Length: 359
Image (cartoon, rainbow, N blue to C red; front, side, top):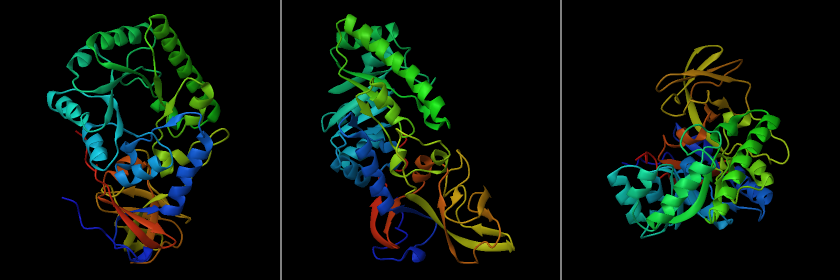
């Protein structure tokens, strides 16, 4: 059940009920435009909806030139298509009778792509699908090894009568390598794997229409490498504490923090400690604690419903604090609504329709 929104259009920021997921529209729109200006027409942009889980966000990205969305789950793709997005790549392997049937049904309503790394999974696919082979370029998660194993799987796709759409080559581990120099070296190696695989596909007479991949921490490095046709950035639209720890330098542009958890001080147990109402159920801490926005205070630890904010002169009982999520994706999945704010007032409320879409 979708929960009641914590505010109404026109509500002042300080009057929003808490905890609430607040989106600064000016910073959000600037981030979208920053990516588009950096990329230009060099590659296709297919943002990752696993980050935002919201057709309202997707439509704004598509209006600026994105070709469609990425998703990680069939249920995310269903939410996007239901919300008006007609081109979705499920950049993940989909296994299981029910999921595959839903994927096939979805392909009757929109252009749908899916990734594979196993010949048995290829034989299970039904429907009008774009089929991408995921190659392991260093993530050490899913994917076949680059080169000959990928070519063998491509032959299986062609033999099956399915449409071979290209390669999925995403190096997730590279996104949070702090040093630009080290990130660049890792992406150069990934590009060599992609180029080697494309060369072998060409020698086998198999066209490779698209190589898709890349993320918010590396996308300009993939573009410079020249091996990718499409980028899948997600977090760039919002940013979070963990991404802010990266070294950012040319050719990567800088993005602004646009996403916050608004919290209220619910207790003042000492002169240097404030307890806020945003704990583990309000902000994911898998990548570290939230940051306290524009104040010399630290969010030190959390329990289910409580967060400890420490430092000199913490806010008084009832005061509001903006927190920057440590990791935006799982934090967003905790909420039903984006409370969209511009210059201190709520301008819109966007439902997070793919919240909990994990199947």
